[in-house]
Length: 301
Image (cartoon, rainbow, N blue to C red; front, side, top):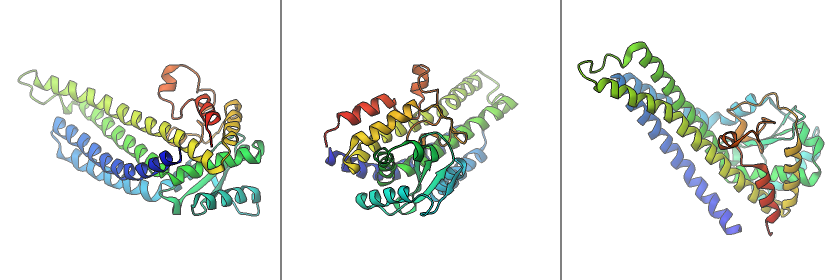
């Protein structure tokens, strides 16, 4: 088990840079297809510019963006002494620098980690988690989030979100230009123009969907890995399992929850939407919480 976790951590670090490279290639490729169909090299230049700029912004400012969107506020040690002690102890055990600590004013039990690397990480915890979780349960949640930091999950998740966003922007532009007649003037002498337009529209529909599915698949896999890593860190899987049970039964709403940041949290912040059918589960940012609890309780540490 331990060897597998360390292997996954090393693999995640390699995949992070591979994903950044592939995201650049994919976005530029999408831009090339649209620029060819629309006979506009400007679209390709815009795609390259967006891919580079948004990856740079995501790398350097992803934590600030996520924290601001979630309504997280910085806190001081004397205000939440027990929380600081838990995070300090677990950070030392994990061999990680102490992350910046934020609080989200919400009755919902939740938390998330963000940042580009362990030296620039931040953890945000809701006031609901502090009020309703026992010390062992809170340690399980914090260990899960620190595992995201140690496993380099936080950067991976951000890059995938940026990839999905850029592809969606390009697809939207393609739709707008094509319906304004940008494709209708191509090859009017035969039916090839119609075929090209049809292919382009299908591509524009599938590209954002494919990038979103990659985003969700990456997010779900990372949650399972962080659960296992967190349980190994505390040596007490039941702490996190018990916390997840309380999270599952929690019906409180997180007012600042958005689709852009939902995948960062330990559990989906959109309460009441987790069990509404197979289609919702397919597009869920998190694996079924019942599965996570079962796996944790079957762990032998």
